[in-house]
Image 1: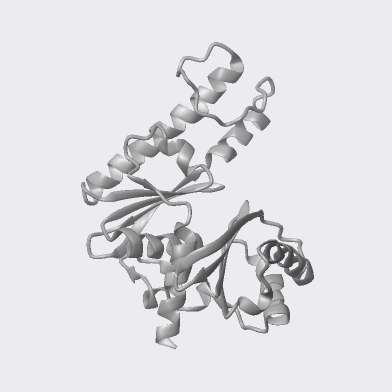
Image 2: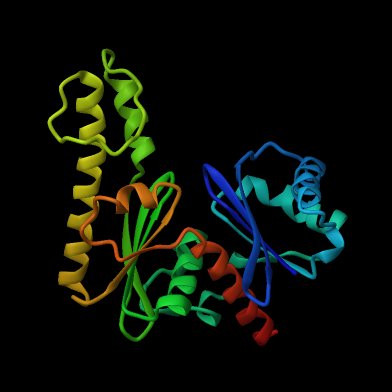
Length: 258
């Protein structure tokens, strides 16, 4: 089985795939201070819960936007899985994703992996939205070339900034309010965060379609994708497994070029 690990700023998604089919998947908090042994023990617990051992893993591929964590992860793979991990950033992007972006090395690994997974699953043209610590928008044209995108603060980051910088405002839960007109401070904050963010997303998608292809399919992924998609008028599909699919596709492409 292929072990895939995607390290984000807030969460790390881990999956086990057989013939590109996701058999198991886990989401854990990203901890850049864990040692290779701590990572291994955590994985051992997850595996044992499903009566699995490390011996089922035939290969490992990792993508990460958190460079400090990579040393421990690579050591963990070598020590406990007896493998050399395939690192997405170590291979030319053009070997698995066509580019019309002038500075490919600037693109985060998460955006690249999502684009590959979306193209393989949904075709093109595409707009891919990833609701993470930051919310990223990526545009893939009708010829399956990555063109570019946009980055804005994630909804949780926006909430934290509001709480930290406005002394009298409380920390609230991110939820789908019934009404836009809040009748308390908490309701007003929840409305502004949710409906304001949905409006931001829809406005960005509409602008992308004006500059790109008007019939681009819009794919959302990330922890809050379902919540935003509930109200959005522009999101076509929510795919929480998009990153894992992308890593599996990149693994296949890299193996073919080796």
